[in-house]
Image (tube, rainbow, N blue to C red; front, side):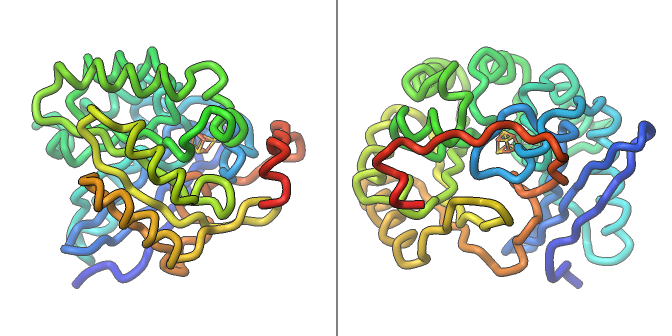
Length: 289
Ligand code: SF4
């Protein structure tokens, strides 16, 4: 028997704070657990629901590993087992790099959860020094949330870009991946209508990732309450995908399945009364929202 839809697990931590973990059934018998690495997140990505919480605290390595252990136990008796782990729940994993590397080590250790390092993916919004350290110290897979093809847009929707811009981020990957054998980074690209989804963006993306061994994942945006962003239409996403594929990029398309709302990948958590500031859209995008 296979799991038919996403399963959201809520944990209450010892100090009373809450985190969320999501178990996601995928095609081909894969089942992925999406773990949180922090309570909330400090990165304030403008399209992200979790980002509105601000950062409450880092999770310990034990609290991270426990999410995968619990999900594995929960499923093993009923619907097969967990095959993949992604650090794409609440938090910016590389902001909590000590505990994330420890947790990932335990997940791949033969005396731990014994996943293949290729099946454990740590995601980042682009903390460049920590990203370098991760590539040096871990063999687990890396995903980078790119989500824009210009600094103008990325500075707006992902403020971390003001510190480590697209040029610095991509040049670091280009340089570091030369020393990793058989290793591809996964670029995540959440598609936002009128913001980052034009054919011109697709062409710029092809140029940006030149020379970086990579795969690109185009993700449908799930609008949440209070969000000024809208999802790109499926038709437009396919056009965008086709431009990338015709240029030889390895590209996947993750369309919304209707049950995605408020589950995983920047959609978790509960914003408090005091929220990080909303950033002003550059003038030429104000009409698009
Ligand atoms: S997208 Fe990720 S890094 Fe950005 S605010 Fe949300 S949880 Fe943090």
